[in-house]
Image (cartoon, rainbow, N blue to C red; front, side, top):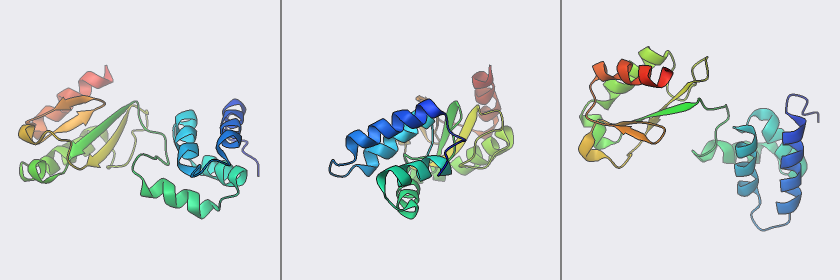
Amino acid sequence: MSNSGLDKAKVEELKAFIQEKKNAPGPLMPVMQKAQDIFGCLSFDVQQLISDEMGIPMTDIYGVATFYAQFALEPKGQHVVGVCLGTACYVKNSQKILDELEKVLGVAPGSTTKDGLFTLEATRCLGCCGLAPVMMIGDQVFGRLVPEDVAGIIEKFRA
């Protein structure tokens, strides 16, 4: 299997890590975490590399990658925008915030803008129920939002 689309130095770094962890108990999760750290996501080529190097079926790698929210199959944007759709936020109209973000960013939840700046995610409770509705961009929390707030907040992150 050729990994021609992947950076050779990164491939070698991951292969060395796999060799180090291969015989340890439960090596798959740490290997997948390391692969995501190295490559930024678990693309098809990265999953195939892990499968080939570890002798684990591709379906198993894909199953783990899609089960755990920590793994991304595509690169994430420079800024990850998470809109809480948990109960407290939802009853305070967080869906309208998400809808406005879709318009402003031009992407659906789970997608990244073409310029690679933003990834939009619909999330569950962010633990800021008293500030509902809430969104986070990186580690910054924005609360008590109305749809009219969205464009201005996003514009600050574009600059």
